[in-house]
Image (cartoon, rainbow, N blue to C red; front, top):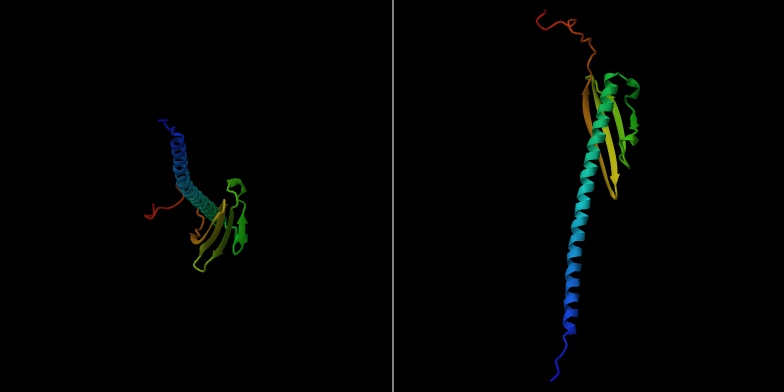
Length: 143
């Protein structure tokens, strides 16, 4: 009797291994897409916080300097130096009757196919500027 060669066994083993690798690659590709989406979302949220902080700082400085020419206008701030591609920052300052400045900030930033837009209203108190040189201001006790 002749012995049969088992060449087909190795071929089946290789095809099965390729199928297992293909299934693993499919699963890992889905996980990689999820991780990329989450990292883009975290980046956009950080950019939005930075834009909001910049807008509030700019508005506070203009309110304290009493730059009334910027009040009741929407100003689009230049955010090019912040290195945030596809971003925009609009600030509108209005003064309410109770002498508080209201600031409307609208921000937008983009990364890939995701865009995050945000906006909010904030209040900034208007203070009279007083000289605060040590010794010139009277204490509440009258000293």
